[in-house]
Each structure stands twice: as C-alpha cells, then as structure tokens.
Image 1 (tube, rainbow, N blue to C red):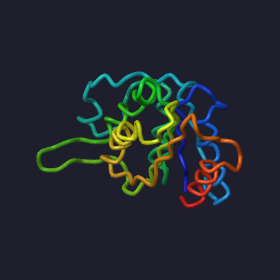
Image 2: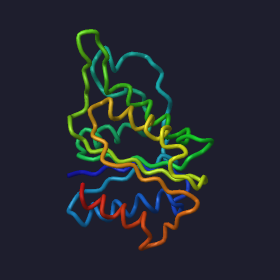
Image 3: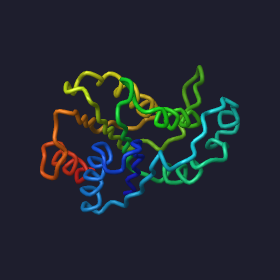
Image 4: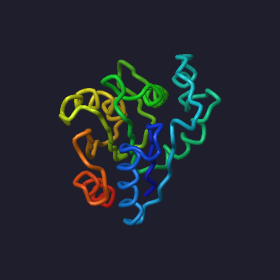
Length: 183
C-alpha cells in the first residue's frame, strides 16, 4: 500500500515532522511504500473556486506543485497529514492544502459525488505549545473532517504538547511507530 505523508511543519527536525517520520518508519517496516510531501517546500496556490473541477469531474487544474500530489493521492491507501499549531489552528499552508481538495467532492441534491476511492486511511499528527493535549482537539477534528467527508477513514489523531518528550522511545514515538505498522 502507498502511504502518502503531507508534512506541514517548516521545521524538518521539529516534533511534528519527527513524530510523523516515526510513523512512516513503522509503515515502511510493515512493507508499505512511503511518499512524502513537505508543504513548506511546495508552491501551493489557493483554490480559486473556478468550478472547472466540478463541471468536468477532474482534479484541480491550477498549475502548481499539487500536480504530482494528485497522482499519488489517487493511488494511496493511507494519507498522513501533520501540522504544528499556529494561533490555535493548523498552519496556513496546510489549510490551503486542505482547501485544494475541493475538487474531490461534488455536492448535489440527489447525492454527493466523491472522487476519492473509498477506504483511504487517515491519520492526523499535530504539535502544540499548550500542555493540555485536548485544548485544540476540536480544531484538529474540524480539519480532519474535511477529509472524512470525502470517505476517508480516520484511524487516529496524535497530539504532541510542549510537556511531552518526542525523543526515541518516548510514549508518543512508540505510539506513532505502532500506528505506522498497523496501517
């Protein structure tokens, strides 16, 4: 299975990326193919609401760094999204990334058309400065719900706080690794 990871932190050695990499290590050891996208290294334009995707039932036609992502996305069996918490929410680039999935759902009175193959496993990994892991959980659930609305299956949400270690062998790293193996 192809595991697609979209890493939303600008810090490649920070907690969000480090924990995500540990999940990916578990997934790779379980025999899965890993594909990574670092949002901070990508040019991702915002959705223009042009409607072309809805009218023609195609992926977004904006010419930017999302073009190779769409191919991987349609082939993946799991999508891992990770982001640090900035101003009580997911980072701006990750919100833009989420919005670009507008092309994957056409809402109609007689029933929605979802352009995502059913059953993609979804995992959210978030890091925050506030020590209470539940402080922003509703914000994380809201973010992930956009993907769930496209028939993806939420497997777990990992929340790292400033009160937690993310050193090798720490509780969150063990949980991430095991989650990756179980995909």
